[in-house]
Length: 313
Image (cartoon, rainbow, N blue to C red; front, top):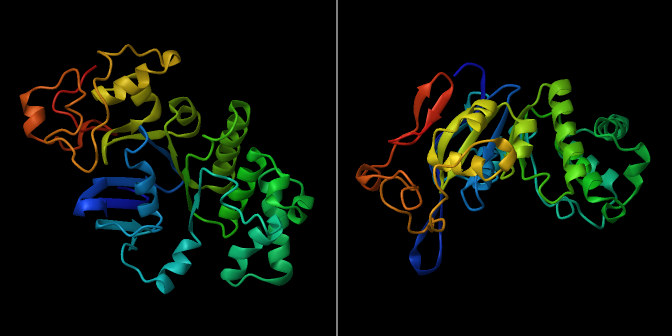
């Protein structure tokens, strides 16, 4: 793929749980992000999108598969060799307060990544002021503690810290889900502005399709550890072809998509997933083939991929 910046190739992430069983959080995912692109990972809670995000940034080592960043395999790099890579890829988390040390002034929090990577003195101090300007906070904020800020302001601080070393990609994991709707819009607009100004690539993890529509140009829908549909954001939201995507979009009235039928049953356990297509136990159009054979993610039109034996729409 042209200008690929970050890529996961057949990545799986498994965890041992009680009784020696295996939880398959991510299961054989292929996913790529181009330089300067904004792409969203969406799906219900527990679908594996956050686990995939942590694999992409090497905050977690995948159980199998390979992650490439700027053409270099980073899957098994040592911490020493990974350190310079971390300067170019950063993560923003959902809990803005837990992401900051409550005992340290925010200026010290912004200085920390700079000092770790050898930026000190006047240069580091000037960079902190520049970061606060970038995210729309007064420079005097550097002398205050995290509890003195609102949730939206704290998330701006976390974004500023992620930008400290001028990364090429940011993975944002549900960065607005804990905020009021009006504040969500402000943070989404900030991400869009920063991406345009700095040429960032952005992986935006969310369950909120309305937010995703505002921030991403491409969307990948996950279900039970795998990507089931991928394509341009507007194309997917206006004309979803996987039954699961169609059900997600139809659940948001203003999206204007009619469901085939409501989703059946509950999400199966990732410890004991169904055979064949993982979605067949809830799918209104499932057939015998779906029970026996797991569909592969295949291209159905230019830039559009779906993992379904019987796509709809």
